[in-house]
Amino acid sequence: MKGHNNNNEEKKNHIKPVPRDLAVFTGNANPRLAETICGHLGISLGRALVGRFPEGEINIQIQDNIRGKDLFIIQPTCSPTNDNLMELLLLIDAARRASADRITAVVPYYGYARQDRKVRPRVPISAKLVANLIVSAGADRLLTMDLHSGQIQGFFDIPVDHIYSIRAFGTHLNRHGVRNAVVVSPDVGGIKMARAYSKMLDCPLAIIDKRRDSDTQTKVMNVIGSVKGKNVVMVDDLISTGGSMAEAAHALKEEGAKEIIAVVVHPVLAGNAVEKIMNSEIERLIVSDSIPIPDRKRCSKIEVISVAPLLGDVIRRIHQHKSVSSLFAKEAVEA
Ligand code: R5P
Image (cartoon, rainbow, N blue to C red; front, top):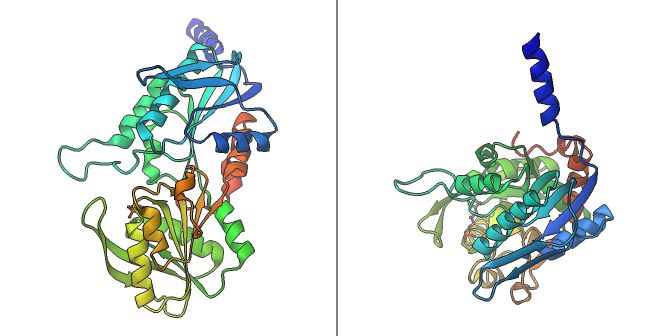
């Protein structure tokens, strides 16, 4: 009986009060996205200095009182990845030391995701190390979107909300009417995502059998499924060098495909990716604003749709302890 009482006492001491005040902060990774999310939530972005010391180290100070706040730090870990990751870690550390009640790292694009297992001897599992860093810094939760591989969720021993942007892209595609379409996955790894799109657009599915020779070189081996005479919606989680998409588009044209639209969540757009897309048989590349596209990389083929309303809805639900999955009931990419 005594033990039972002690337990209750212990539990009481460990129960956190329901967080009442919502606050949103950001580093330098994607301030426009953070501003748009705040606009959607009807709140102002929290004030924080995220600068540099003269020699280049990151200098952080949160300038609002955040004691007892339910804090969301929006920071995709896109390029410059190491700087953006470090800003995120330092913001979390600052928030923890300033007595925020709960800290959610909002990482719409999770960098270092591609090394998520040992595919060769003596390589790191970078995605796991980054998870360890975020948790050690003091995050209580993670909110992320269209992870390169779903199993990265398991690298965190804190709650993870992994959401999909398919709804935002679906609304856009339906508005512009995609007729006589086939959804194509540019590689076997993207099949679950492609299947979810083919279900949503109610059209068939095809897959590219791609071989990766190096980080920048890919080769299409086969197109599995029929694309002849069809308009293609090619979907992927990210576009880096653009090689996979450009190669795939060429193979699809050779198989008799008509218009090719590429839908890619995270526009990493490394090196001369934009040039490759411009010179490819892709007519339009639709991407999200999870990663900002610098002016010098903007081009006539790229259309950006905002995932800020979606992220804002999810943040509101997390804050209000409401179900997040019910927002995505029809869109189970992992199903
Ligand atoms: C691969 O698994 C990914 O989903 C992308 O297809 C790939 O990372 C894109 O890379 P790139 O644009 O450099 O071909």
